[in-house]
Length: 505
Image 1 (tube, rainbow, N blue to C red):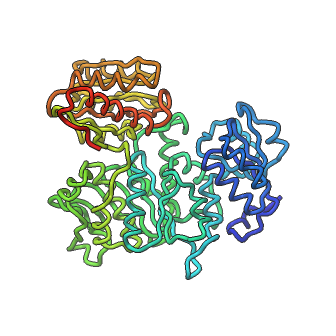
Image 2: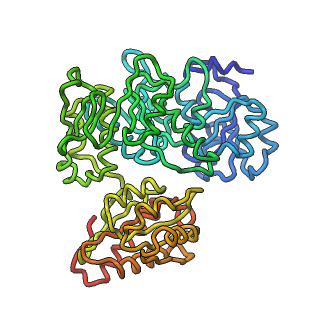
Image 3: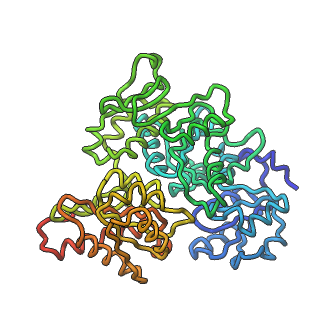
């Protein structure tokens, strides 16, 4: 058996290590490709193999087992892996994960593997890139992108990786090398990462949990397990534990975290900041954490007015900007670097994106609001909207959201295959709100009907807001597919109704 405690470098002896890789998506392939390059013996186990990746596996010398994983396949038990590296889609209760745990087989995620081989490409002084970790129920991708761009503006070779779409292993192996990896981590990835032990466990330069609200409860098995996974982001942080002062859970995570001696707690929120915080004073975003005179002074980063000109002034966006600024400042970016980044930064598609305007009605695509916390932020930014809600609920109850935000909307249009619980929530908490259901089974028909219904109820000055508070996979390929179909339907409807106002790009 290989001594896994010795495998903490790209230059360690990985040859002959038997590793089973679960899943063959972009993450699974990056794991298999890395291990093959290291000389390990690799078996990929998956229910369905992407044809492109399946064709590449023999080329890199990796075996493939494809078939049902409702039970542990014989091919896996016969392989007798020393390590199982699971793609983040595999929950703790999955039969293969349970089998791995019951047989005391080392269970890693792709992020742990990447940390172990982080020294493949090093900086001129011999040090691997610094790692910055970003998690939270909402805002992860925006904050990850912002942080990376702020660092790049400061002249650092930074790259956003992880749950944002680019596997961290691909960045670790990039021969050009980087100074900083800004790693977006889902709660799934953190569950695996929290299983680390030993002296060389991942130790980030800085980390943030942006917020916490119920999500992915069916994956984790409950809210406590979900919170515990998120809290792991702060473990062994060396310099800055950034937390949301408006979210007590994130403060408690920092208070409970085992960090490196000297690491600082840096707070952010939309209020006046204390001497180790970032916040807002008279419409100005300021830093009172990363300056010597922080007891009496603050540094200006930008203004709410400047952000509003770029569509970045929604309260949850300002919070994300403050969090990213804290992370970037912890690595040496200046206020000028932050201001310059925000001058050209644009949100990803399907994130509070205006897709059309007609006869005084604005149509907004926030399809990326896939849980109640995200949808609540959108509804706060667009009070009184015609709200398009529904989809795959992931075990989350929308009752509180309907009670606190749904009761103030002009109307609600419910989509998805799990509509009954949402309809019941409106009946219980907001019975006066006009409610419409879209029961089309065909994906192609859903958004056309949604737009017809919304156009019929919206009035001059209203916003029609797609903020589903649910995942998309019951009816759409992804949140992106859902948002694109909504935008297409909006533009088609506008084009067919007198053309007096042109849709906005």
